[in-house]
Image 1 (cartoon, rainbow, N blue to C red):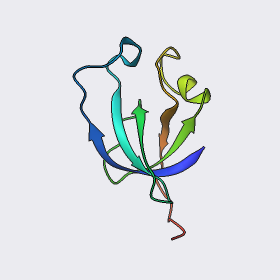
Image 2: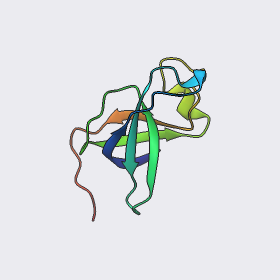
Image 3: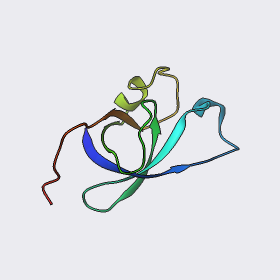
Length: 83
């Protein structure tokens, strides 16, 4: 798991069937790396979230058949970044 910040959303009208209608969010890691994650929890830009990656990411979704290797597993309510 990794803590990341939501920086935006992605709208895709054409996708593979395995993504269904899942929301997609742009995330930034503490090292500045940008990634895209499936968002089953409804995170908003600015939220800090924790993610599940690899094969565990599929099981963090309601439907484990979703094609993902990065899923937002929860929105962090209280946390101060270490800088």
